[in-house]
Image (cartoon, rainbow over all chains, first blue to last red):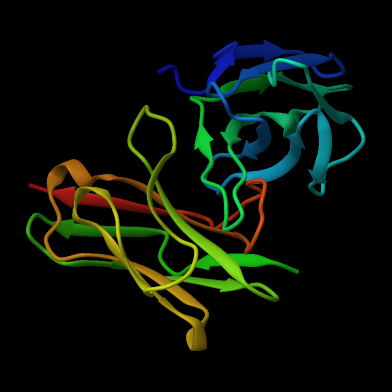
Length: 114
Length: 115
């Protein structure tokens, strides 16, 4: 079975530009979450989507947005890029359960803003 | 606010040494707890999880963790580490019960094992 796939793997953008990152969850998983991992830190929660609805949002500015499609894939969009947006962006998919969900992570997209 | 803290940023051990990585969380209500591992160049992988029940949970590759509610801790242990355990380890938590996978991570602990 394919795991969580993210594209592109690496990306270089200029300050002020816009970027779109993509994620395909594990087959059967309806929940997708996005995380930002800055070098030397743990992943920080950005968004969570379940059944195409936003279920959670982390402490990130409105320049960050996301959506989930009918096939449960997801996009993360970042507008007006800043140097500080340089990070590894991780997508995780999970299948919610009554006791808890296990999140499975993709390889991530390494974004460099210059 | 919900938070997770890991005590050690970098741990260096020799093969066959015992390992314990500390993790404390601050959450209101019930909590689910996880340890993830990130090997060099690879994606985050789940080592083990605690949802409820037996506070001593066993994971893959000989790792185990103990949930101590009174101490708000979920420390990771392994009796004898191997060179292949060299990686970064992350403790994570989420609100218990029905969940959609919103995790709060600690800062991570880099483990270096010398042969």
